[in-house]
Length: 344
Image 1: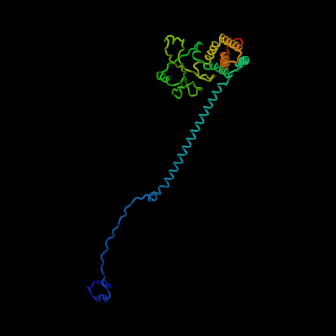
Image 2: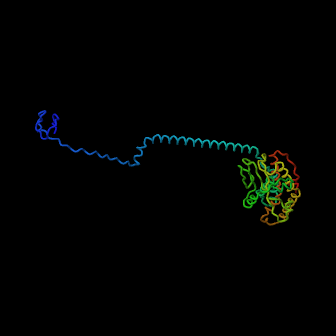
Image 3: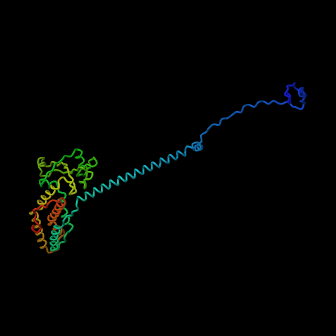
């Protein structure tokens, strides 16, 4: 044992320490305890939890959010600017188109058909109808007048050829011939680099550098048909049209050719003999109606109007011809046609 006072090693069960004379009977021997085993350290397994994500990446979310917000604002500003620029471009284009249309309208003066000649013929017709107790058909008379004007404004290829005005023709492609039997088109134009087939010649030349009009085929008395023999089909042809600024229209002919052809057409269609025959028909119908004692039969009013058909159409053709001359600045040329009174 060891003395607890002087630490001297002594035999077991010694009562008094010989070195320091300490009474060892009062001291109990110290019990030695077993050394504690080393503690077992358990390592906690890391388990991923969605709830821990904000806490883990929270420091990164805030700057990332600012970055996304800034990008969104920049993208929105870019889109807004592009939309504004597009609207501005469209506005400029629309203004340019409108200015071009207004310029084109200025080149085409609004000259109305003169109804002076029509009024004279209609006065004579209505007086004759009143004397015969027959109603005057004003709408029918106006219709004949408009039809005569249309004969000049939309003069046919046959009328121009009879006037000696011949233009070059172009054949249709095999594809166009196939389409002609299925589609209803009478013209074609180049528009935006492509060929567009239309039901009529367009009213404007904007965006159309070239146009063609479909010619149905040679007339029955033409050399082509006579050479091909009876029953031969007339193949359609293309004729190149040109834009006439003064008349504000596409046409296969020049303005001078149109006026010359219309003059010859009017002179031939409403020749003196034609008007004289019509006036004689009016007198014959008047005598017949005067002999009838009973009420006029149905359709008498239409029969009387029919006897003035050529005279109303003539006035329409002359009015359209005068308007065409006024628009182009051409000098009027006399047409060898008598007045209705002279024709009678």
